[in-house]
Length: 124
Image (cartoon, rainbow, N blue to C red; front, side, top):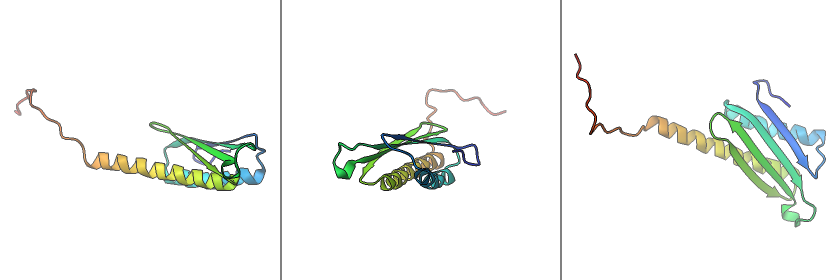
């Protein structure tokens, strides 16, 4: 499932059948991440259903974002698959916002450089 801007979305299911409606739901939710960050290369979403777990943590959604720079990983658990996907996308979105804010702060407030032991050339 590719987006228009050469951004890739991979959806896989573990012990879970991926229906077309579930794939469309994941794609619609992940489009929000692609809109917020243009440097995303790939998003991989793994949906897992563990029938032996308790009802509140039966569905697990794991997300892996590959972008320019260090990648991001997140994992959530929920009682429904669609709810797990929505929580996962919200968590990844918050992580992207935090990363963007940290880069912006670093760009606007560079560290001071001390030239104590360095001889600077004299201007002519």
